[in-house]
Image 1 (cartoon, rainbow, N blue to C red):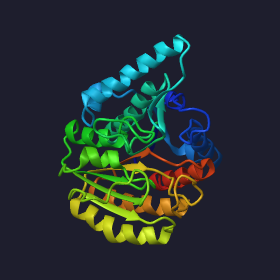
Image 2 (image 1 turned 135 degrees about the vertical axis):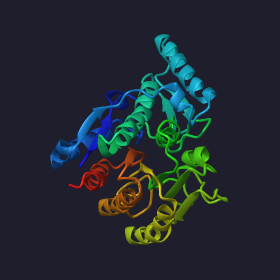
Image 3 (image 1 turned 180 degrees about the vertical axis):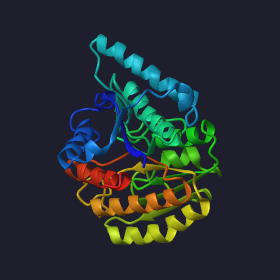
Image 4 (image 1 turned 90 degrees about the horizontal axis):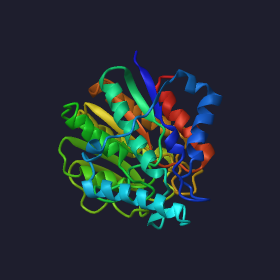
Length: 317
């Protein structure tokens, strides 16, 4: 049986958006600490992510968006050398430092390298422990802590570079993956299924989604059992009907009941259950092929426990 891969890069820790920002480098440390303490980390095939190429990023993003982020990074470095601020603001919640460009290339590159390894049969599935996250990054702009849409880039890469005919994207972050929907909406080769708190940032996902979107908005304080029932009733039949040849997961763990950035009531056991149902679909239709990428999750203890639970299922531990 092929192993479960674990992709990351040191550059992903160097991107930061200022003191007190919830999307912080310590998130990756919390995951590493939990995998070390639990012994789960020793069972994984660890690989360092290469940077994504600009041509691969263009599978999901405009050339102008990519160039503007690169230009902003260069401009920031010049301003810092002249005594300027350490960050450049993209939106009220999102900024870059001089390491963001490299971190964002590594985050997307992890998803692409994982796709290559899974498609080659070297790995059955993989988890990308990366930041910045990606699912709010739209076709032509960054937003919501996200710069490049790691999962959308990888999904298009599997279709265009590996010749797959059908891929699925599963998003269980507490926030709607508006960027992924923006990029993949109407692409009949992709089915996206998502569950998210609503009404909530970014206040999208409910206005006439395209036919290849299966969105499940849920009110604040929804508990895990209700979420499981909705997934069983809505996602699984759609996924089985679609028969994806590969599944990509936007693995956000901020729907955990201990996470202050959302108000849903999931636990690590719920994330394990969701992962097991996705894995069942992957084994039925996709030769088990899954690439999962970290999105949200800001309570460090809950994040570490949830990622451990997610990876235990992926790796059959």
